[in-house]
Amino acid sequence: MDFKTIKIQLGESMAWINLDRPEVRNALNAELIHELTEVFEWLNSRDDIRVVILKGNGKAFCAGADLEYMKAMAGFSYNQNIADAEKLSKLFQTIYFCNKAVIVDVHGACIGGANGIIAAADIVIAERQTKFAFTEVRLGLTPATISPFVVSRIGNTAAKELMLTGRRFTAEEAKAFGLVNAVVDEAEMVDTERQYIEHFMHASPDAIAECKNLLRLVSGTNDTFNPVFHDTSVLIANQRISEAGQEGMKAFFEKRRPEWCH
Image 1 (cartoon, one colour):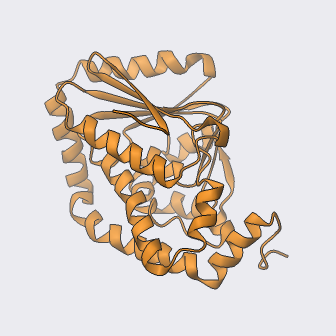
Image 2: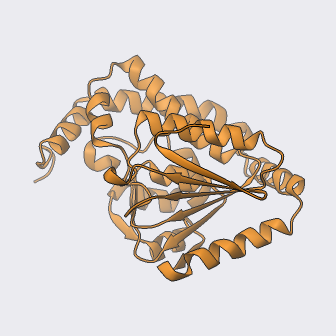
């Protein structure tokens, strides 16, 4: 498969995916979202793949939405915003419902929608200096499409603190909130990843797939997520075209404080 925004390497029973837009810190745009969704769908259909490892090339895992992508969405109509949000939601769903074990290694920055990716994964390993943030409210927006996955992973109380404040937080805090599983120094990233891979290789791949389904069943997400996906797309579509959403994005592009800041 030929991709422009990601790189993929296949090994025995494993697949490594690297986000490959280092010049913009792997910021999410329409093409990356599409390609990452496509590759996860493809890997999920392969019986020979048991573990998927996702990383980011360059200085950061993912810095959130791409600037040019944001400029385009600022001019989207309501229906265009719905379609765009549903594509992003589909990416998170594809990762969350993947029947393989999914590991994500993060470093540098994990901002905005990138947190939806890690919340949908099974295991998240964070380099100690990584900075996290749900910055949407500071742009007059809401973290709508990622919210089902984030709330499922860390709970409503933690999600309220992080999403309502929009503050940056550390890898250690991310672990305390349950967003990541392990926090390690850069030199320990590969060894920690290998340890998790070894654990997964001692487990039946069919049992892992069924265990993931079991956990979704017990948590109720198999039944409750589907209607929520569309609702969150509607919510963010409305917010993007709202006065606050338009002002927040305009202020961001103009590198000034939005009007609600004093």
